[in-house]
Image (tube, rainbow, N blue to C red; front, side, top):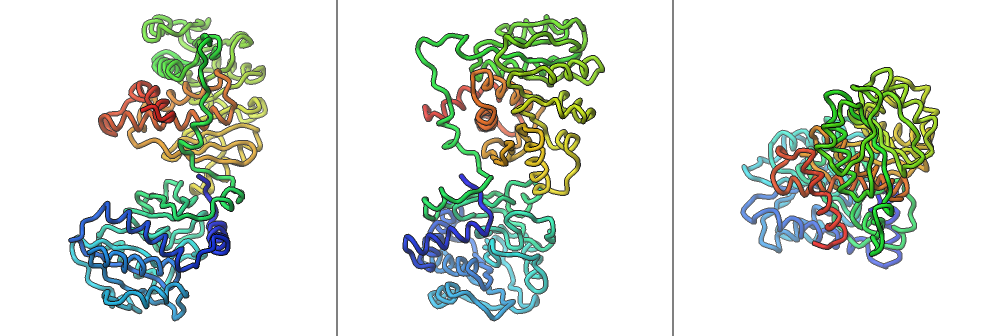
Length: 502
């Protein structure tokens, strides 16, 4: 699913109105019908509903929803936040259609209505066309809505939130919704962690905007979903053998941190790699042979740390970093590998931390390399950023400058390619915030690289599978109880879900 700037969404709306053709008021009716469908599945008719509307089309959506709710046995009331005398045409039409629904106009904050216990507040004050921070009377209303403690549902976008960059916004003057119902597309700002307190749980409601213009409209951002990943999965043929699926080299581990290698190797095997060899400190030999008998081993001359990596020519792809530590000998080994690596490579964990301490080594990062930092690791690599939008900008710049792919891990893991494209993952859950989860992702991506997936396809497919396996694991227990091994155990089920085999 594409993610557009709000201005582009407005243009897609206008194109749909002209070319379907459909009247603007009828498109609003269609969108409001989707709001109603969502609402009736969530809330019983006994709960009071208070809809706060502004003067624009977002307010028009609120008025139309009030009418539809009333026709379906609910008892909504409308509170018109009048901070201007200018209303949109569609707002005026829906105001005339309200009939006997209670309607109150407020022009100053002491007219704010009393809110009963259990009331659902629907926020339809400002839409995605907002271009400056909310202030004055409207901001006072937003403050009061945030204070009353009701369940809040925002239509399309929380009032006061910008669709992309909120660097210049006033966070105190933004609705804090429990649910946000976004029309047709998510907004880019929904992808950033600092905005979760405003959006709450967001849902995309398809409203039938023109598919042709959506396809033709260019954006660098996409929400990564099953429909994109499913056609990327490679098919296995009857006469294939283990050599058909690549031989990966995994380099990592140090004394006391062999678990990271075990998790990465097991994840690579569960993702379908034909063969995997782990280059580890020699003292880890017994641990690895016992924990992952399917893996082959190369014992480093160092007992406790990786110190010298030999030829990689016989391998299909390389992964390095988890559990490796930052000993001087390990740093030297990493530099040598990077300078000579002509194979697809995924770089994670301590390998990233070593890089961040030796920024002159960035010149050695192989073209197309996949770097998988968490936010703090990325900050060490690329510098501090002010917010999610600023971090996204820095991420895309880093990918372009270093000709690499950045997999920036988080609730909506973002994958940036050197050509400027970015995918935000739709799978995953808070239960995956657990030790070893990132090591599992490294193993998954290494496996896909070894099997011949392109750098981009290995990244987006690996991230999606990783998150989906985590979702399946959490669904069997709870967020709190998920451990990294649970994610590995559900990789096979994740493949089946993507292929729709279960």
